[in-house]
Length: 285
Ligand SMILES: [Fe+2]
Image 1 (tube, rainbow, N blue to C red):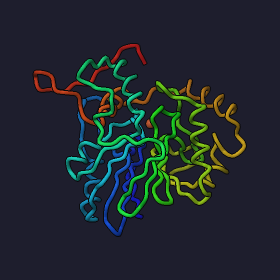
Image 2 (tube, rainbow, N blue to C red; image 1 turned 90 degrees about the horizontal axis):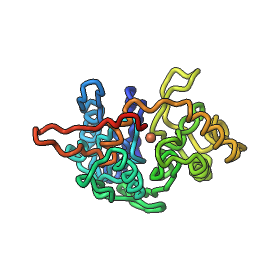
Image 3 (tube, rainbow, N blue to C red; image 1 turned 120 degrees about the horizontal axis):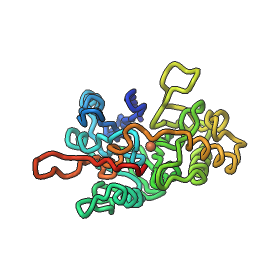
């Protein structure tokens, strides 16, 4: 299994491409669509780097995997699907997330919150393959109710559960977030064998480090994770997480990200002038 990571410094997102060298089948995990909030312009620099990687290595994309509906970047899954193919998948409880945000954005009848925008919805324990490499979907709620981690061979793509040991864990204060659930999800990931490789969805370059990093192991996280190392109790974690979350600003791109990502990355229908719009709810978040 070959893993290539693309890091987007604008949103601190690590997108991963996994492929099976035997069959040359691939999965793209959490791809980024570039978005400039001042102009409302989308662009494809990050996604095109992934397309180049796919083409240069003669890969066939089987899956476009989302770990969750991201609140800090827009997904490029539909753009990549058009360029290189693949089925767009996410956790089945995305329907819960869609329900919450359909209400927040008052989307009306044109947005169905039944997950139908995605090609596949995974439940906990669902298995599939990337060529000859087995994949298991793990439901790891907490950051959102629908988060998945993907166990791919000896590696886990943990999404927004854990970060690098020196940065800790993901926030739990978005609608449907739950610090207690995140603690349980992290413990589940950290019960895998010591040598299991963990790939993060984000890195914010913790203080004292001068490079981005997105790979650790179960043993490293268990020993050194500043929020959830071995010995931290659920109660301690929930108290820390809740206190810390109260100090955090909303992510810069939460409003555009959620509106696009809840639609699997597709944009809302164009209005009668041919333009697509996103909404900004005032004084709600
Ligand atoms: Fe996230």
